[in-house]
Image (cartoon, rainbow over all chains, first blue to last red; front, side):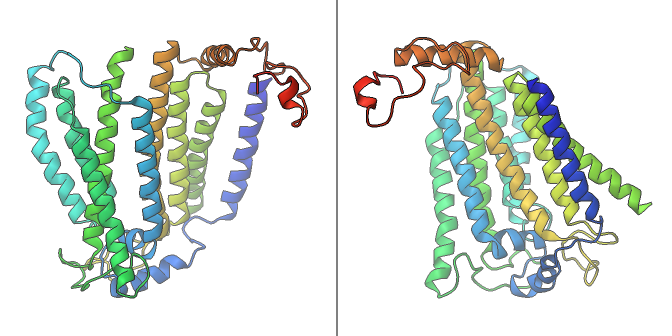
Length: 227
Length: 156
């Protein structure tokens, strides 16, 4: 009976979504704000990647809220799992250990590259931060007896979050709106351009990386107790 | 041709979201519910991306070869970018809760875990075990708020 009602609900929802989707012709977006942003972004913000212009310059406040959600999720995850500490476990095999040693610097370089080029190419703080988290999680797979230092992780996380808000408040201090891009915009397409946006994305990348790395290490360490 | 591609894309995105929602509602296993949540998120993200798609347009990145060309809408892409990261955080939180439930009750079946949890709650509150969801613990009808101190006696 309950599953029948659930199926009816899902079917009705699907019908509703299909009807709404059927009225939207694919390929002709009804929103006009995107075109305005494309015309204004290069001059006003100075980034080549317009997605970055939307995320950090036009809707920077939303990104701050999103970072707050991620912070809340990571904090709640840490609260639920607690600090179980590391326990004696056999080390991984030779292949995994050597592979980790080889991959760690490469992942670090790729992650930082993606973070620093977020205003020029596809990528940015969120994507690069996830790669950084993967780089710091790999050694935990190879050497399970070592554990991540959560104090350092929360220090990096807190400092980068404070840097993001501090850059926003600096704009307020200069008489502009919160999180307005500061500094010289430079030449569109060069590495040092876009004013304060690369700094904001660096803060986002470090914050996301530290949060996800500590969350993953907690999950990995807790997983041993159950199985 | 373009029409049929549009139909396929919309049906695919909506279908993914529906599969995820159906899985969340119908599955009895907690881990499968988390996986269904991930599938539903993927469908919703695809739907958002489709809303900003344009034919004959390039990615919204300014290079020497894309100056002056029409570009796809960057706003839904920015929304999806943040939605994916939020999704990862929410899934990690859900997984950590699932790990705790598995440690506490030794099962991932939601019905069993809920029954165990209900017994513990009843025992902690010091009331008769509730027989079913229609007949929860305690007397019904509940006492009026003013008289609650007189005959309420411990339970909520």
